[in-house]
Amino acid sequence: MSGDLAAGLARFLSEEVGRAVTVSNLEPLSAGARRRNVAFDADLGGCVLRMVATLVPGAVQLLPVDVEAAVRELVREQGVPVPHVLAVCTDAGPVGEPFMLSERLDGETVPRRVLRLIHDHGVGARVGEQLGHAMAVLHAIDPTRASPALPGVAEGNPAARMLAEMESAVARDLPDRPVFALALRWLARHLPTAPDRFTLVHTDIRNGNLIVGPEGLRAVLDWEGTQRFGDPMRDVGWCALRMWRFGIDDREFGGFADRAAFLRGYTSAGGVFDPDRFRWWKIACTLGWGAALAAQTAAFLDGTVPSIVMAASGRRIPEIEWDLLMQLRPTGSR
Image (tube, rainbow, N blue to C red; front, side):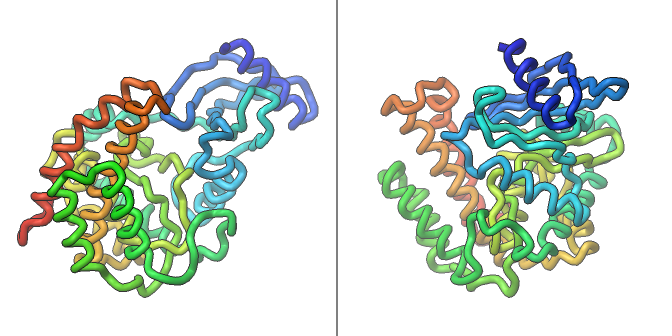
């Protein structure tokens, strides 16, 4: 399979640059439910480029690869640290599925390795500030500059839409779980109004979608969930969920930084932090992740996705219930 992939990438790149390109040193980096990333070297004849191919089967794309590539380049040009997209192929012909090619940046991406690196080099607060700064830069970009192919509408209330989605998901997959019902009632009672300003939202910025080196944050990855006209506190709340701390629960952002460090970076770059809206989105995102885990388990049970990873998702639901109860307390802040 690696030989077929190398040959397909070489053919594509040769056509793109107009001369023979040799592809070598293929190295799988990750393989998620929807996509896989493969590092490789491309010899353009005297010039070797270190690249990453992100391969996305068309049937499971959240965004078409060309739309994702375009939003990545938009935010990179505005100062968000993102690997430069070098080429895009929407045709499944060359390697069997659409893909994009990006520059390869060194660094850690696996969450526990990220945390060990940050601990060893004492850069947790720095990464937190850098992450806050990057998120504020993203939220400052005019969303009308992004492709209209991105989901999201410039009207209504993103929180109300999120609540409706969660109500449907809980009714479908978690109808007999009282903690989820309690959380839905709380979210309905405390529903915020629409934000003063709609922004681009990544929807999945967290430890696990970052590249980190000894000096700090190098890049934000995985832009397939980007939406236009969202509430910026959705990104901030999601990033602070306990499940992305990987056991270091006293550091709210990714297990590497406290809220103060994140906010130094966020506010210094023009971000406006709303604590009440943040709390609402943090609880909504926790509930949303629980609903997603339930949906993954259901997909295994009905035979749609016969994967042990999907089957194991259900064991996390009691943990999500505990998270919700801790956050719903009058002084809840986990």
